[in-house]
Amino acid sequence: MEQIFMSFLNTVPEHLRPFVSEIDAYLLDKDCKRSIKTAAKGYLVSYALPVSKKTLLNFVFRKGCVKARIYAAHVKEYEDLVSGFPDATKKEIAAALECKKLIGLTCSPTCPAGYQFVMDGVEYKKCRSMAFLPILNEENNPFIRKMIEAEVCCSMTDR
Image 1 (cartoon, rainbow, N blue to C red):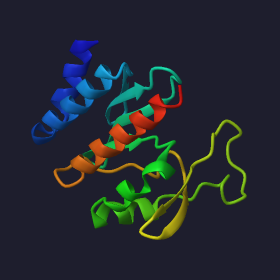
Image 2 (cartoon, helix red, strand yellow; image 1 turned 45 degrees about the vertical axis):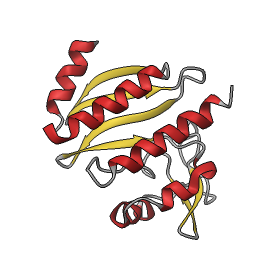
Image 3 (cartoon, rainbow, N blue to C red; image 1 turned 90 degrees about the horizontal axis):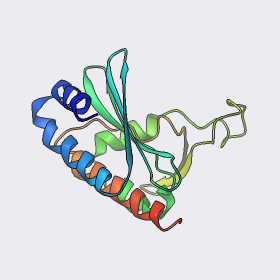
């Protein structure tokens, strides 16, 4: 598994490798389970929470960049953190697809529904897969880390 992770890490732009390694070490230290699959545009690296086994984070490659898909089940508990993201990232979150289930439409029967949260005083109902998919960069990384830490903390208290 470590050899595959190193292969993935070598595909990450060099300036982002320390951040990705930090997140990996943090989540493994919290007993999250890492899985790695090859995908059409690179690797898909996922981390599942220890008790619920639900996915917390995916590192994915999109449009020439690396993104973190954060599954923010407890986002209502740290909305202020989301409001702190850089403006460009908040615009991406605001532009993400609406959650069909949360707005009364039909979606896949296996979809667990998205997230309802407030950002900068505006209520959003966003798709679980698209809501929190920030690009890794020097500006976003501290906020991504705080969001992951908050989600882990909230998830651990669910026990």
